[in-house]
Length: 245
Image 1 (tube, rainbow, N blue to C red):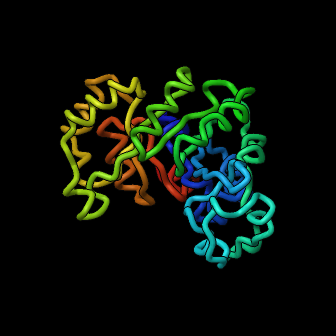
Image 2: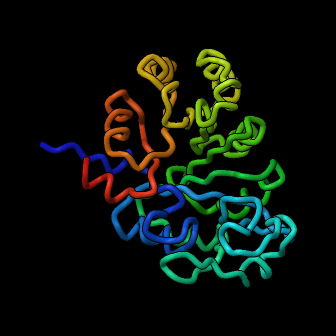
């Protein structure tokens, strides 16, 4: 009997290899392809609306050099996301939440500070605990998120050896696990690098924590991390990876 890997593959910014990242097109495509978990990034606009975009600046995605936090929602949604698949808009979190199918999970990466939490509480109030997972690189932010959403899974994002600079900042798995437990977090979400080796994964699993991996489009790496015991792997090509598995 073939193993079902559906719950272990996360669509990075939607199905972002085939549609503009973090747009309704990319997110809806992921769901339409049968992907059960999709990840998005959120910022706050000038008028305190939660918008779905990765960068703090809109230039890479839209061509306009402006900070998200300095633009109103209307100004942001007036911009076109022009990539190879055509024209799209920067969506709101509300718009993305409405797309989530039954028994699917949206993973929300918080790219700004704690000021987003009260607005987040209002916007996701009607969604089940299983439908939403929170992640952030900012330890203070994800710790506060866990306090506000104790029943939702919250994971601390870590660069590890993503760059030479971040590799120098690596403090060791024991310190990471200690801080993760102190904040009552459910796990960590780590870069698919060499630091996340067999011993690293075993330490996380022994601590009864979730381990997500970001982000790879390699079938070999995906298989490697799932075999080691990772709970999920994030990829721009979720359907293609699933088909290869």
